[in-house]
Each structure stands twice: as C-alpha cells, then as structure tokens.
Length: 406
Image 1 (spheres, rainbow, N blue to C red):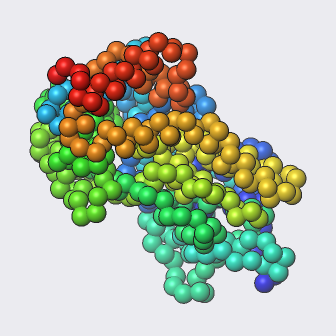
Image 2: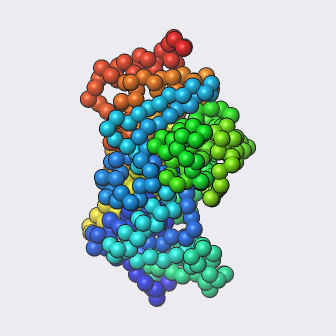
C-alpha cells in the first residue's frame, strides 16, 4: 500500500496521562506527533498525585481540587489509624479535567490531535506502520461504519498508550502474556460538608475490609466539591457496585447525589516486553505499570510515557530499533524494587481479614508512617535509615507471627 495519507514521526494512541505526556515530550523535542484519543473516556481513579509528580511534570496548582494532608486506614474490626503527612500534602485531581489539560498541553507544544478509536495496524509498501482508526464525535460515538469510514495515518514510530486491555499490545505484541488485573469501580458523588458523617475534606480514607474487597481495598478520596467512592477486586463474581453501595451506606454517604459512575481494569504487573523490536512501544496501563498493593498509576503512567518518548526519540534519531527497549529498562531500573516490595506486601497482607487487621495496626507505628510517606512522596524506597528499617522489619515479623500485643 502506498502512502496517500498524512505521515508523522510518531502516532501516540491513547490520550491519558501516559500518552499525553509522551506526545508533549516528543513535540517539544521537535518531532511531528499525532495524538489519537477516544473522547468521553475517564478512568476510575482516586486521583492522588504525589509531590514528585507535581514537580517532575510541572502540574499547576489550579488542577489540584484538594490537598490531602493525612490518610485514615480502617481495619476489618473498624480500627481507625490516622497517618498524617508531616510538612506536605498529596494533591488530588479530577481525571476528567486533569487528562484534558495534559492533552491540551501536548497540543500547545505542537502535537496534532484527532478523535477516534484505534482499529488496527497495517504496513505500507515501504514497511512503515499505518494506524487505522475510526473517527468519533465529541461524545465518542463512531462516525460512519465499515471499512469506508476508516482513516489511516502513516507513522515512523507508534506509542500504544490505550489502557489495560490495549488493542495495540494485543496486535503488536501477540506473544506477550496477559497481565493480571484488579477491576476498579467508583462513583463520583457530591461531597458532604467537611466534618459531616465523619467525612474530612483533607483526608483519604482506605478501607481494608473483606466485605468491601476480599483481595484489595475500598476508598473514599476527597475531590473538593466531589468525592471518589470506590473499590477494587480481582475476584470474579464479586459485586463492585454492591460493595460501593455498602461503603456509601456505612459511611452515611448513600444520600449524596451521584454525578457519574466509572469502571475499568487496572493491571498489576508490568509486561515483560514493551516493544515490537521494529517501530512500536507501549506505555502506561498498556505496559502494566500500576503499583501493586496501592493501585497507584498516574505517576507511573506519566513516568512510563516519558521513558517511551525518550526511547522513540533515540530510535528516530539513530535508526536502531534496539533503542525502543530502553523504555522498559529505564522504567524498571527506577521502579523495580518498589514494585517488588509492594507486590510482596499485597501477597502477604491482603489475603485475609486477620492479616488486614494486623496490617492496619502496624500502620500506627511512627517508623512505618515516616518511611511510607517518604517513599510515596518521593517515589523511591528510603535507604538512609537502616535502624528504622530494622525496627519495621521485626515489628512486621511480629505481626505476621501473631506475637505483637493487640
């Protein structure tokens, strides 16, 4: 097939935090970029972003709908443990506005934008990638049917950032294993006044209770005028909507107006391979970069998008497809140890309500709180305090063996 359609250096498929970041970075590097996104797609997400994300990606204050200054952990026996953030805060964003702003920033940097749904990859007679997509209206509805409605764009390189069930990854990386997922569902509701029914506008509540999630957790996160009330679970047949209804009932939020409902899979393990060895790399949820145990994904998605952009830029500059593998290598070099520790934590602590009870109790420990917040806020494990790590290790062991006092 000969090229009778536009040619770009890079086509980025998916305009969430990862894809929008990659498009923005590549446009600033002087590359011709097309950002393809389906309108009307909002991922269920608590919306927490740490200070490192705000710094590294220059997020303006006006996007922060709330500033959480503490977290409250709630155990199966309803034990409540407050974890204050000393001298800092966690920013809270509304994904509808946050994602849209990231896409607009990419456009201001020079990226072209189109609304559409990815259909498939083809090759032209020079072997270049051809992205086939179906145009959509602003509500995400397809414009036209059949082959005649498809549009085509030629790309020297492609970034697939189209989510946990990535069609790009399925087509371009057919031998890659299917990543395990937690399924998340949340309801955005009208916030009650701070202090009413125990709600606090500066606090994230995390519920480790088996009836709300048998293998993950539930949450209530403040978003200013609204709040995210959600739950995640990988257990087939478990009613996520039923769990959110129960959470709203026990938290006296059942009468608050529901603004929207959203659900989606969240991957919990990075893919072993992110590129096709030719001209394509995946990023964000498509690459499986969501942290185990916490389910946190925004920072890791944006970091992955940046690494993908760097790898693609190097590939386009040097013409060596081996450069594409640098995206995964760089990401894992920075985050492998964190993902390993969080994966072990999820495996041990989320398996039963008895262990969840011990976990929440352990969160009351000052050493645990300090190390946890330092690691979360800066996105790296804390290595400078071996004595604190030793204390946490032995307390952790005591809780696991049932040796710690109640």
